[in-house]
Figure 1 (cartoon, rainbow, N blue to C red):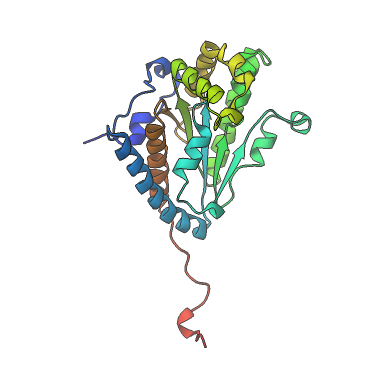
Figure 2 (figure 1 turned 135 degrees about the vertical axis):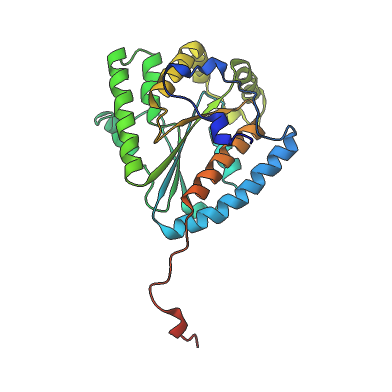
Amino acid sequence: MALKISEILKAQAGKKFILSKRDPDNRKGLPDDKAARNALTAKLGEKLNALQDRFAAEKKTKLLLVLQGMDTSGKDGTVKAVFDSVNPLGIRVAPFKAPTERELAHDYLWRVHAEVPQNGEIVIFNRSHYEDVLITRVHGWIDADEVSRRLAHINDFERMLVETGTVIIKCMLHISKDEQAKRLEERRTNPAKQYKFNVGDIEERKYWDQYMAAYEVAIRATSTEHAPWYVIPANSNSTRNAYVAQLLADALEAINPKYPKPAQDLSKIVVT
């Protein structure tokens, strides 16, 4: 029997997970043809729309999609492609940029908790609380002991969300260093993409190896039964989109939302 997409992508906890062994060009379980992968994503989008309609109406469960990845890994593109056919009233994107002065005055999870989904809502974190154990670690803004404390906090935080009705799907969009170089160059030279170009991305690229090490540590420590990580091969946009769409469709199908019954007997109501 063929492996489920979730089993192909899921990251094991502990030392068994080695990020360098994950191929960013892998497309196991998907069609080899790009057009076929795009068609699959479109078909899954229609399924997501139907499932999300029942999910939003039922208002019993919450769904949180976490998108993490290096610059140019396709976080924005994933949101656009996967949710293209989904009713925007039932979804919300929460981007996490550098914290404000007010946010820094609170604990690092304060701003994150304020953005988690409510009943019947799908929320996409474009970057997330994991920035606080990635960029902070790479640049030495926190020490190893604080990293360990924060990883424990994150596990507790996510367990609390799950125990109070949130389904969490965490996706690391995995691209190669060479692919990032191509995408940054395209941003530099393509007038339609130059608005995305940030000189700071070139500086962060110098820390590539340190980021890969930080991701590996974070995923090893926080890929749990209640909130597993999925490493999404993202050198191909069509592959990335199909994988994420399938994970979401599978999660919503497992929730199996139902339209709620009317509060009163409608058969006795006459429309005149």
